Length: 371
Ligand code: ZN
Ligand code: ZN
Image (tube, rainbow, N blue to C red; front, side, top):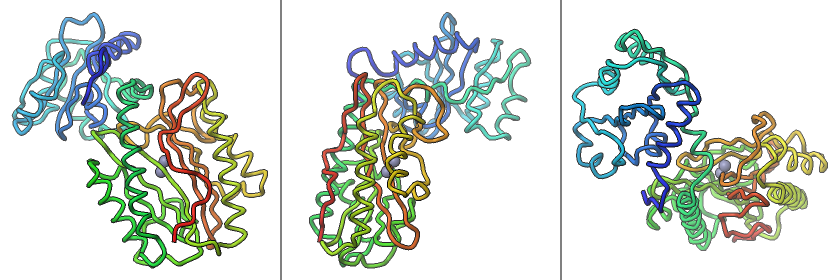
């Protein structure tokens, strides 16, 4: 992971130490892959970090097993004491904490009940286990400039891959062929892989927001929704475009496309630091409701993107009321889904600034005809 001046794990560890102190947590257990990568730089699949509140004497501790001895030596930030563990990381973590006492934060969204019970048994009594999910995610929400550059690079790669895929046409190929082609092109262009299973949904199938590509030929003169993203050096992109496979699409398809485009453009124009996720969702929803399609936009407006393709903040009717912050990276992806008929979704990935937003995709949004 590139670490431009003053950014990366050292700054993040310091920021989390402050957060822990504010919350009167003596230490925090970090286990989830994305959180662990963010605080330590480690990209392996079995690791654990124990972070300490500011003012603590103990340095942060990183635990992994012998398979990752070399990799962890190369990747884990120098601020950590690194320990190669034989056996369970959880046992080693409890042992490392045996001398101390206080409130120990753990990720209650990912830790299983069984592991929680095990940790409670292993830990010395003076430790109190405190649910603390989301502390690292909260910090991840505002991106460093280097992270935004990495997400932008993933988005550019995804743009290039879809243009190559579309050059071979859509009509006559199956949805699955197009999806596989797009994912292979992303890999050839250097992606770690797709950031989620690619969606290619034509005609009435497009009315399913999470449609799985089928072994069905894409006809001429229908709409095709493609939702795809690349992971590049750990960072995700996410984009959706809806294409037409001929000038002969129905008047209804053109009308619905126009409504979604108007809703998407209005919401993009409203994105800046300040409004919350509910308010931004409402901007797009008002346009779609005004066109009589309110009941056909069943999902939220968007979500944050970073090391995970779905992360805070949420932009939806039920999002929390925290203002969207400058430096966050969010999608804006309204859709209209007419069951049994068609679907349209248009999604951009945006960097939020104080006074507006910048799109990280360079693809046009006016309806494109692809043969
Ligand atoms: Zn998407
Ligand atoms: Zn999305």
